[in-house]
Image 1 (cartoon, rainbow, N blue to C red):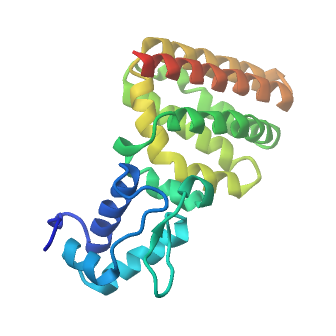
Image 2 (cartoon, helix red, strand yellow):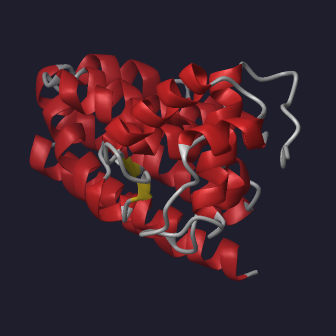
Image 3 (cartoon, rainbow, N blue to C red):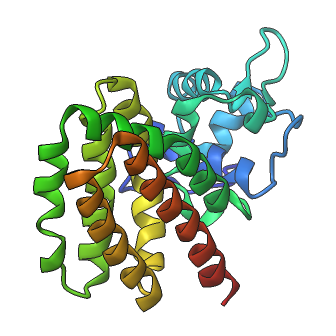
Length: 233
């Protein structure tokens, strides 16, 4: 008996991913749970076994699952066994993110972005300054703030001299932009960011890379506090 009806807008592998990942995230298949065998699961999903197997292999590679030959596939403790590629998949399912996940992600940014900004400031200050020169043209539009703020972070990563920083941030794009659309609905958040852009610009004009790191670190810490207020309300 088929338990699910395939969504016509999704390719078969996307459909399988959607069902499996959301079932893991909503607790239907918690860590340690065994999935039905391939034949039965393929029948339930209404797809072919090769399609199912392709998706299982990819999700296993990301750390969601552990495939055991001759035995049932088991759900991993993906927070402990997953990698950065898992974040890219997780980002597609914002409605299923666990409580506190965005705060944890912002804490990672607090640790990572200040030294990235410091490196960019030391190597390509003119590029960052040119971008910041447009900050005063920002309207109060939430989407405009979201795009501008995220592109600033990407610009810092790309000019840090280490391409790995860009690869890491790229995996966060959809999560951060979705979060920012909520964050920048608050006037307090927009005002804080305007102050941050102005302070960062002034510091780049006359400060050291260490001072730039301090400015970015203070702004990232403040964003966590504001986000906490947003979610509490």
